[in-house]
Structures are given as structure tokens and as C-alpha cells.
Image 1 (cartoon, rainbow, N blue to C red):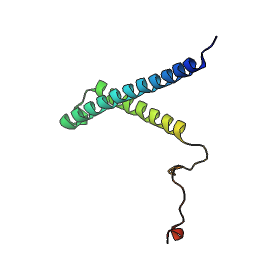
Image 2: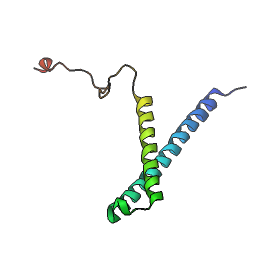
Image 3: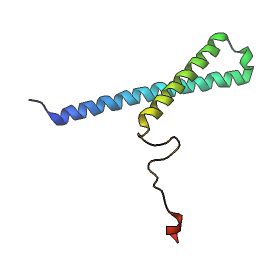
Image 4: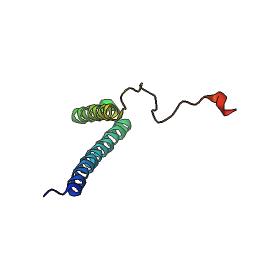
Length: 96
């Protein structure tokens, strides 16, 4: 006999766990990106080892793709870019 509440709880737990894992990985990548960037600023980007430069660009590209995916997923359908769908139009003349 299925237990609907437990199934719902389990699916929400899995969704939250997946998001937290993704956020943790993203935060680790951002920290590493900053670490490499600070090192490059200290010694000059031309003096950074090729493997670190390559890693920097791979992380930067991956984070950019993740950000685009989140923006696509979180963007309500029908809204124009740059508009906040939570903010309603206000007629200034009604404000007296």
C-alpha cells in the first residue's frame, strides 16, 4: 500500500539534495576560480602555468553554462528579459 506523503517527502528530499549538491560544487568551483585569479593577479597571467590557465577557463565556462541553465529554468514563460514578473505596473498618477 503506497504512502503518498512519504513518497512526496522522498521526492522533495531528493530534489533539495540534488540542488544542494549542485550549489556546493558550484561554490567550490567559484572558490577555486578566485584562488587562481588571485594567484594570476599576483604573478601576472602570462606567468601562470598552462594547466592552471586551462583550468581557470574550463571552470569559468562551466559556471557560465550553469548560470544560463538556471536563468532559463527559473525564467517565467512570456516575460521579457530584464523584467521582474513579481513587480506589478503602477500608475504614478493614481498615487496623487
